[in-house]
Image (cartoon, rainbow over all chains, first blue to last red; front, side, top):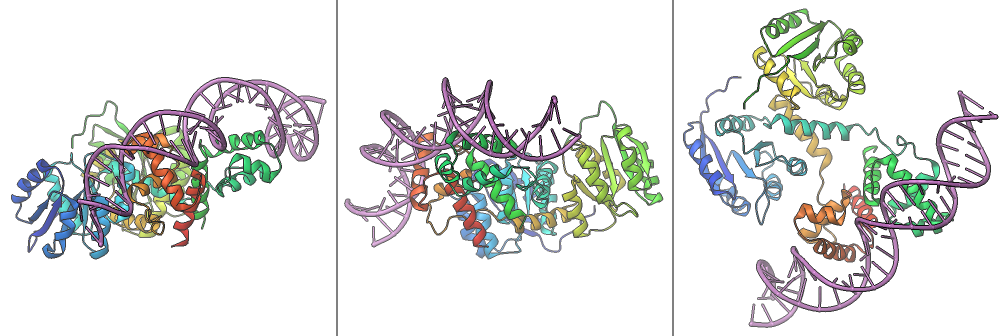
Length: 222
Length: 222
DNA sequence: TCATCAATCACCATTTATGGTTAATGTTAC
DNA sequence: GTAACATTAACCATAAATGGTGATTGATGA
């Protein structure tokens, strides 16, 4: 792929609580003609506070920071500047944080183990409207994406019996074993048995898992 | 990134109704030591019919083919071989087809304008568990993903503290007290304390009630 | 008719959750 | 600087849930 030279350097800011990271990034970006590191911040709070006056073209944001996390910062920035590209940085691949970042409005996701040379490339990529991410993270996203798009596993698909559906419905309403047994006029142990089988069929092992799985399925089915 | 040499060549098959594509890919892959092009097919039907006996490591699948489309083929292959990496190929970036491929279970998505040299790299990437895709396609996925998920913001009206929201979020995911304490790096008793206050604020007295109340709220305000 | 499954119930041991109380620390707001 | 609150943590007792095993009854279907 060819990368055309920038007319004006891309204005970049970075927030990271690790001083070493800030320094290395600074060193690398200073060598680049196309990219200008406008400012570095040791916290998300400072970064958010100064972003308006700095008017950067791209934001690099560490995902894990004390006080305000990078994810919260992204939410705030995204609200004020809907089009501003934000690249998340992290030291490891945490599924939840990746997804939360994405949902907060991040535009790309890089591991800190990424070579600093390729960082320049990635910044240009996200500035040009792309979404750079490591293939491993991309794969995780694909899986999650495919899972949520295909509402294959509704409570119908789990082949719960009628009685099991009755019990599950009451569980979702927050009832306890005892309340369910009273309401359905069966013994506590029968409720226990039903729930055991429900757990097997849903591949869960607690009420809360069963409840959230069930409700989420209903939502996804629309 | 370093790419270690394969012990045995990666067995690849390709389905594309364009003879020129087949020939160019064949030419390129024949030069590679690490990759062995086991077979080429002019239609998805043929490909699907022969996949079982060929036992490929990676499948390259054109997205647009007469009779059976690549997307349908992916669905069939994915059902039989859940772990088999499939790379989609197309001449243009069609949003719908990208998403449909992903939902069908494709593991990556490449434009045919991609240089043939990088194709080798991408095949190795998808074989290694990655999900190669162009940044532009990745961005489209991110946007769609963010739009449909949008978690968080569950409990504004109940005025939960930040930490309480953290705990509640994990409860909703079906985590136990113990798992939450591990994940948040706080003691079991602290989790206990947080949950006590959450219950007070939500006017509930069990995980399942809290979970369903939380999820229902999320649905209603959106 | 035999096998399968839904629905019912029971006993056991162990883990987990709930509710009450107390308290130290640190931050924020007035 | 004091009041209010967030966050952390502990102790205790009880209630509830979980997992394993086993068993009876009735319906359904190959």
